[in-house]
Image 1 (cartoon, rainbow, N blue to C red):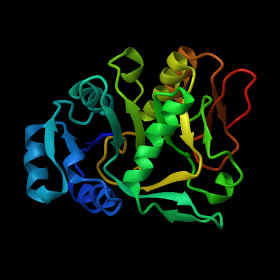
Image 2: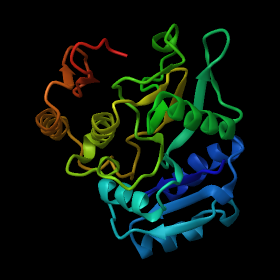
Image 3: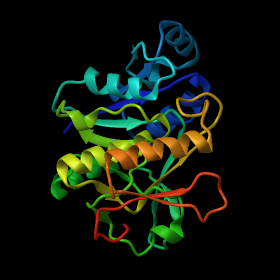
Length: 258
């Protein structure tokens, strides 16, 4: 079956070329599936000058410059209902999975993994799927290959089959938008599919980017409180780590952490 790949980007043409587009190509994903989404025509002109035209199929100007929710919502609206859509951030340096020895290795057939992700989601009754949040083999070992309860899926790489319904749209909390997406999908569908043997190597907060500018611990905490108000009892914040950003867990009442 077919799928499309959408890559929102902001002031990162050089990163996009060296990271995500190269990663997709190494993994056997056809450039004909890949569309780059930028916020303005000026940015589209800059990207066109920097990117190899053979590395992607086309570019869409959303008008949502610097607005991660606007970009992601424009992507949802761009494709017809029924599209199997993979969203990949512009700084994706590798998709990795546990090997037989429990070590992380780059996925060599990313195309097959994407197909497996959509199949696993369908089998588990989920409409959102992705990989394990922490790039840490020790945490990933011993987990079931696939889980379908409430969990966190990194926004940097996630798949869904579009239905054009409310849970697909996000907004108001740009620094925790991936948590919001998971909560909205789970609240609507009762399931999220996570491939626990798969994770990502990225540069989340490198120069440029839709989440890099303006992010502070205070704003992050304030937006988490907004989510806690929207989804009472599901967002749990743990402040014991050294980072100024607390650990966040999504957990349904009575459920174990997965």
